[in-house]
Length: 197
Ligand code: NI
Image (cartoon, rainbow, N blue to C red; front, side, top):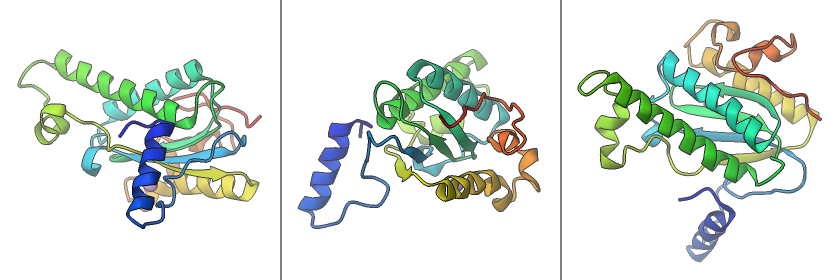
């Protein structure tokens, strides 16, 4: 399902028609200058971001899409099979259009890498399990509006602790694919972080 407003509306209508409440995090609230805590996963939650290379590509594209669409990036973590972002709304478009672009850009880059690597060599798992569509991302994303300082801190702490909770590392500093080094030290990490306003 495309990450656009009409798509979400269609989803909302479908849920209402089935007599269900819209699942939390799928309903969009835009235009209130809130921050957005976004969560999205790799296709079937496969660990398609398990390599250093894949996570580096993701972070690089995240920075590029931020510059192009002009949103403020306040926090992130790239996990082996999912990503969290804390971001402002972009100058043009919505978090949905940002996610659409980012997901497309990253999956294209990953495919390009596969071609460069040559046939039969370095087969990425999504080729084997993703089938002919070679999907990289799970459709949709979860979006929670963040508009208090307390919630912002909570989400940042949650993101930075994620690799430790998952026992990938012992300390957040050992996982460079997050905004940890920026808080509160303000040290630059793999991608530039933005000031809140
Ligand atoms: Ni997580």
